[in-house]
Length: 183
Image (tube, rainbow, N blue to C red; front, top):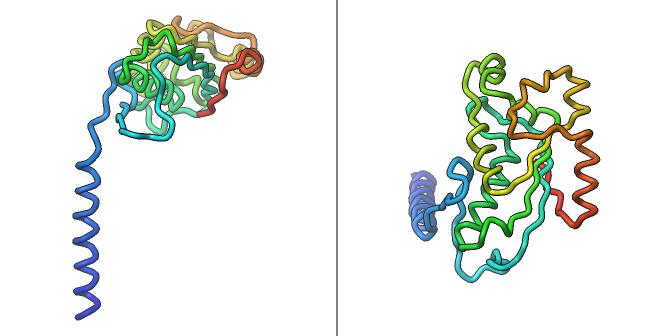
């Protein structure tokens, strides 16, 4: 009986603590890419985003979405970082972002017709790809991967340029000072 009482009290305290913690955080904002994860502004953090800094990153997109109605992880992460910069009022021109697709992530850049034929639903990534292009993000797909997998280039959205090789793209941008972020 005493053990049961202690478990109930501990569970109640945990629930109260979880609710209080949830209430202290502001709602995330997604001002640049609404479909991507939003950004939560946190006061007095150790490394805040800087409004005047130029951020250079190449997102190595190799993983596909867990479900066909979800974004490719690299697109979501690139979008969330654009949302972070938008939240602090930084111009999106300060984001020098590149995304290179290969492997399972290539499914996310299929045209809507090709995606529907493969997964039975529309491609949720297409709107995000368009928004990212408007924000200045460069988008590439590995030509070698397309060739080896016998993917018709016409099945790839025109928002994405076909590069010779994803690894060449990654090395070029890394040699030019871009951080490589893999998802």
